Length: 271
Image 1 (cartoon, rainbow, N blue to C red):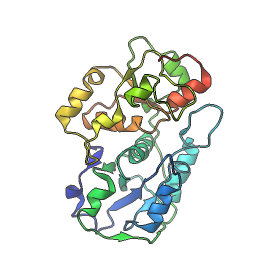
Image 2: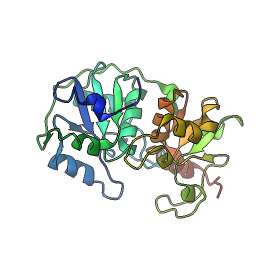
Image 3: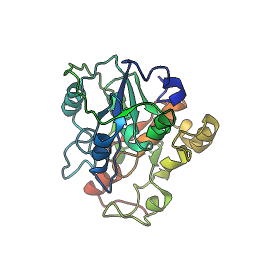
Image 4: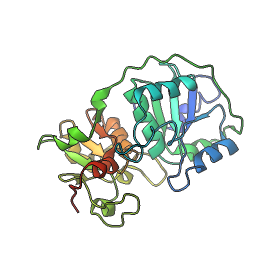
C-alpha cells in the first residue's frame, strides 16, 4: 500500500466509519503541546498517539532518547485503541515526523492498511470538514501482530555492518558535521555515514515531493542493498524510510536507537 494519501482521495470517506484517524501531533521542545492541541480540537473521531508514551518505550542507559516500545508494549497500545488488523488507519500531525514514526511502528507490527495524510492537519482543515473536542474510546481489541524485524537494526548490527552497507544520517547537515548540536551531548555522526536530510523530501506545504525529486534526492540509496537509516533518536529517519517506500524501495532498515543510542555505547564518532 502506498504510504501516504492526499486529502482529495479521502474526501469521500471522511464521513464514514471506514477510517481510523490518529492524531500524532507533538513538539520535542514542548512535550505537552500535542495532547493539549488534541484535547482542544482534532479531526472528528480521531484518537491520540503520544510520542513519549505510545510511540516510544521507557528510556534506559542505552536505546536512545526515544527507544522503540517493546513488542508487548506496542501491541498493548494498539489493543487499547481498539485497532484491528484490517482497519484502514490514517495518521496525521502538523507535518510529517511523528506520523511517520507511527506509520513505521504499525508497518513493523505487520499492519498493511496504514497511511500518513499528506499536508497534515492543515490539508484536512482546507476542506472544512468537522473538528471536535470529544475524546472517544473504542472497545479493546485483540491484535495479532506479525512483526517485521527485518525492518530494524540495533547497535551491534550497525557496529559490525559490512563495508558495502550504506549508512544514512537523516539529520540536518550542520548536526551531521558536528555543528550547532543542541540536543545530544556529543556532536558528530557515526563513522562511515552519509547525510540525507529528511526535510529535503518534504515540500513547503508539508507533502512529499514528487517522485522525480525524490529519485534525485535518494539516487545513491535506491541502488544500495538494504541501507540503514538513522537520525538523532529514530523519529525523523522514518520520514526518509517512508519516502523511500513511496518509491518502491522497501528493503531499507531503521537504526531505531540512532545517534543518541550510538553515543551512549561508544565514543567513536566523526565530525
